[in-house]
Image 1 (tube, rainbow, N blue to C red):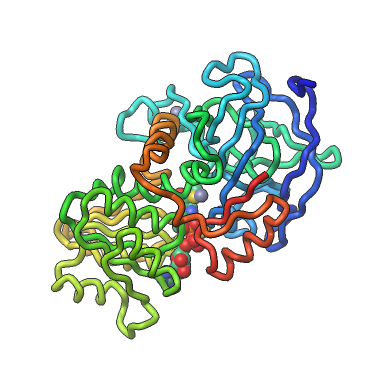
Image 2 (cartoon, rainbow, N blue to C red):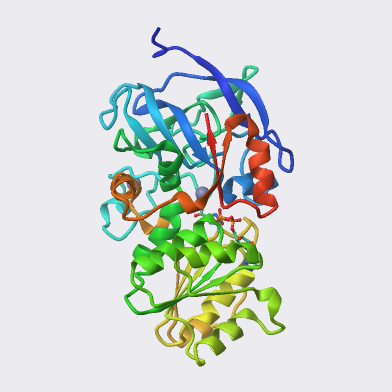
Length: 376
Ligand code: COD
Ligand code: ZN
Ligand code: ZN
């Protein structure tokens, strides 16, 4: 029996307040309004950004359903939706691409003005939500909310992908892989034979390593306080790995020594800390080095640095979703995954049923997982 046009009752993982685990409860998901689609999640990955919602370090409005890295199938569409139809396989996009705003029209930009990544309003464009629990509204997260069996997204936040794409792997293209890989290829524009330093070797940092390697970098220094991350980083392309905990001096001085005082050509901060952002900047060449910030620091933080670090010629830039225009890039990356241009298997350390979501976050807290994928 078709569920189109009806309210769907389903399981969802809600965060009612920060610093509390997920509650798995039955919610109601309203049908999609005009230009929206209701989608059934098939697999969703756990990303550190979701943990920032649990910890409260990213300010948002509670109760909220996090999750922003998934593969889904379209259950029904609202009026005027043309880019997908029921039954299509899709990846929801935490960074929309409306195609109409100034950023979308600029070939260089990707931060579509429709994004909900800075104020985290947690509402659809019309200012309401499609989720409710016990009759009260529940907020969405980053235009997606994938820790639920069904979610509703705007068509600006949907990429149709190849129907044969494997959900447990392709879901990483919705965030972690594209964010990291794109940061190297598109935002950093890493060149052949160059040297790179990657601060943070989680799922996103390892994807930066993969991007640096794919771009032909000859030296890739992986940096992490958790040495358990080193074997995988080396398997994916890091030429050496160091832990700041093994040195008394600042890690940027160590990187300078490793590069005969030159610094690396490209550095990437993939942790989300202000001290490592400055260390990454100071690790790149003073003249032509490019340092890319991938991690988001806690909402209230500020950075202090010597202006000389910039004045002498370094370029400091940020990268959201790898600088990629989401709706255009995601279907192509899925095809590249399917043609084995890159492999995502090493990044997926755990696959758990959706009900075990809290276990998945414990693995992340203990530093034991790279990516945990939840299957619905
Ligand atoms: N020095 C070196 N390494 C460190 C330090 C430190 N001081 N502190 C932590 N680390 C290491 C950890 O051991 C870990 O291996 C790694 O840094 C971080 O990895 P994860 O697995 O916790 O996180 P990821 O890879 O899933 O995500 C990292 C981000 C930086 C992308 C994320 O935390 C973030 O800031 N996201 C917001 C930015 C963004 O683009 N969001 C959009 C959707 S993700
Ligand atoms: Zn993410
Ligand atoms: Zn736009």
